[in-house]
Length: 204
Image (cartoon, rainbow, N blue to C red; front, side):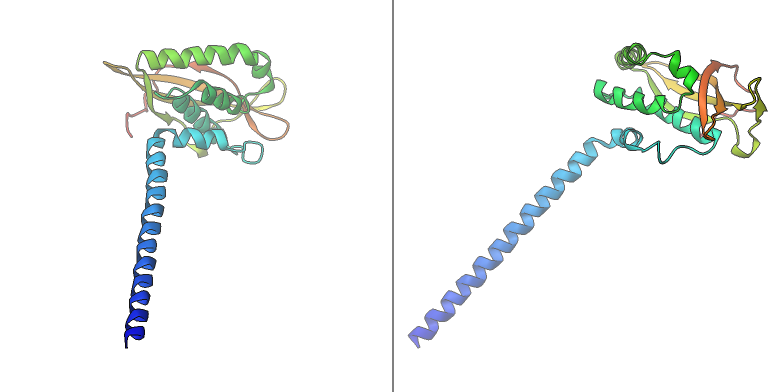
């Protein structure tokens, strides 16, 4: 009887130890997941920026002028964020240059333009200026295409940026000039300021 009682006691202790170990493992994994979730939460503002940085534009280039315009606007918005680092600015600028036509690349020397962009981003951060949203002011199925003197298809896509500083809101209107290259990709030739189109409505 005494031997049986002792065996039962040991089995009980073993079960207890296993349960304790299971609880410790569960707590450990919950702690890891919480850390991951907290880290993800801290980087919420960078999510869209990271998508832009990681996008493979060689394999996944925008197929339409309005899609190119949307990516250009997204880059402009995200790169001027509150907590964007110089390293991120450089990575985003490399992506931005992939949207440029050869002529625009030739007129924007890499190091000079990158230096200017970093300075601009720092000034935005210092002055607490944010691009809060943007709007493509041209419906995809109504894009007007014209042929330039060299025989290339070209178009102009109007856009709007909503900009906020510490005390006021403003809107900036531009149009992106694009040309289809020999591979069939729409590339940016440049941008120019325009007046607010009459049909534009301030909507989310």
